[in-house]
Figure 1 (cartoon, rainbow, N blue to C red):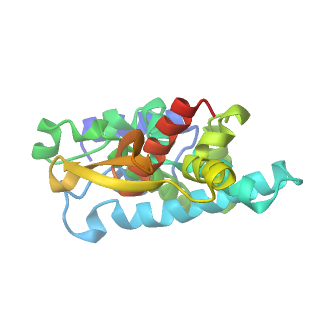
Figure 2 (cartoon, rainbow, N blue to C red):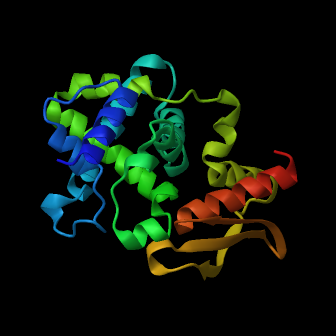
Figure 3 (cartoon, rainbow, N blue to C red):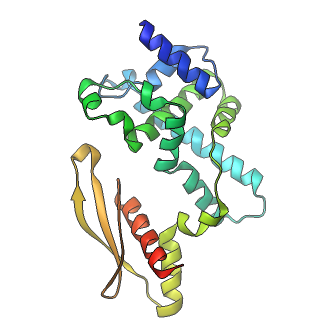
Length: 227
């Protein structure tokens, strides 16, 4: 292991507040497929595992913290805490953008700063912590870096549902969403969506998936309608 890699692993462990018994697990979690194509040498499998650990951790935390909230409200809060932009921000706070190992082409395009890659590497790191220890320890690491959520954001976590409820009440029919264009290369595509009610454009949103773009368009509509 090179001195540079060893320094990176020490820095990530310090930021996490967790010391690995097997640092090779952390090294693997920080290795993007552009550097190592074979599944056993990159972080994609570990990301798959870390996503499951993260979802169960957050679900358990919310279930215990808010005993009176119904399932739908718990799901909305969870969606805020595990969405791509939230996880990418946690990854930046842990400086994973500095230590993610990518191929030369990805380095030139500054792939380490993409929200999608940062979200993936964070989940991979959580998967590595779980494999190196146990679920209880992984929970502690995840919750230590969990951002605070703002109750005032509840209405826009699932903006599509909020907007649909509004129009069902006043007009008995929902707004519609239309994909108007796609932007960017296949590996980093952005979708642009408009939301309309009858012939009026209420908002436009973009995102890495159509669902994200629709949610952003709905948020724009809620702002326009002052809801």
